[in-house]
Length: 252
Length: 215
Ligand SMILES: Nc1ncnc2c1ncn2[C@@H]1O[C@H](COP(=O)(O)OP(=O)(O)OP(=O)(O)O)[C@@H](O)[C@H]1O
Ligand SMILES: [Mg+2]
Image (tube, rainbow over all chains, first blue to last red; front, side, top):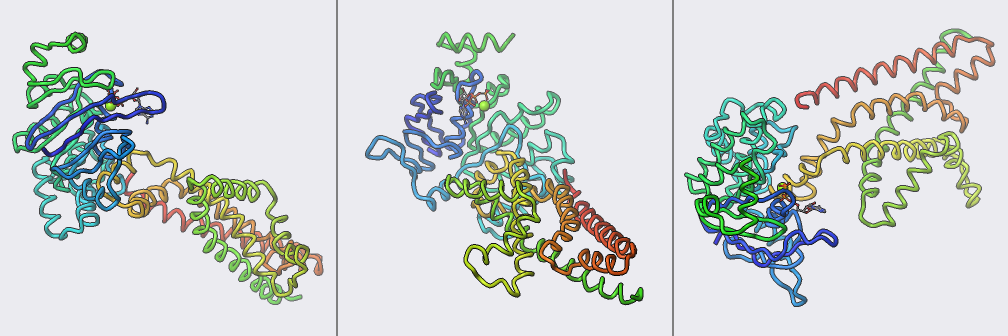
């Protein structure tokens, strides 16, 4: 398993947002997470990427524990050095890109591999050029984010995440901030990654995309996983009332 | 008094004015950053002290602060203040301007979206790297106009050093004007401040332009 999350609980104040969620993702698996607004999808990704601290539960990457259960039953994070190592296993693509505006496209992609991972510069640049080619952005290497369309910015953000060579890539609504005519180019890139056997977890509202690209679909509501399984099953023949309701509302 | 004598003694005053100006910039801009970072500390006592410090510096006249820094050691501890005049001026200006710069920095830092920190964190940047590589350059750009304003104010504020009977340019202008019953020294002083601010504005515009490559 690339990622293993067990019995994750997370509250903000008195509000329990994740209620005992477990999620395991295997190598080369593409998992889509769908669900209504406020169901905890983003929070789940933010817990998986350590942007939020879980209250209880366990998280491990490629078999190495990053969060375990302490004697008091609460979540216990590993030390800073080990946590930094754990972070090397994943990348996260945000809804609103969060590119660094003062860095060129090339520097956005290469800076962390060079200055965080301390990798060889020539190697990193060669890899970045290859990534830009895949993203169909070779001609924009010297541009600044503000000079790019939303779709191009998001593709740079994906390249930036991939440049770290993560074992798993998380996407939080990667096309929600885009104009409808730009979502296609980003989805195409993600689809390509799926074909290249990249392990991915994608939170999305693009139902046709989720249905066609993923190996597994998870429907979340109210901080729990209501239903999950093969996309054709979940979309074509949902067993839970809440799933049916959600999908019906969505088709309107 | 000949024109030449007047200009040469005013010239000396100008050098002192410039010294106050540059030393204040040199010390207060970095100190302001330290104050902002402490002001943002999660320890309530530290951030509280910084808040009070900033409130006092901004809430009382700079002239009064200069007098306090200069005469304070004598009245509080009976210490000798001979030869301390210039240091008191620099301390007074630095402490005052650091507070203003701190507030400018704070506004700039708070204008950076949480997403920038999160992107940096997920990419594995350390806290220090995030601050110096990602946050600070963006802060610099957003605060530049306010910094320019502050520096221009400082050019004019240097004349407040006359409160400690320090012979910077404006004090000398006043003395000459009084003894010669002439208005000319004031004109010279006015031209000097104007030109200096013009230079400041020019330099700052260049600095702002150099950051224009992104928005
Ligand atoms: N930092 C926070 N502080 C307090 N409450 C929060 C915080 N972040 C999220 N929440 C709450 O947690 C719940 C789940 O939010 P989350 O963003 O995970 O939902 P989501 O499924 O991603 O929704 P959307 O589809 O709108 O993005 C919401 O009720 C939200 O208000
Ligand atoms: Mg969300």
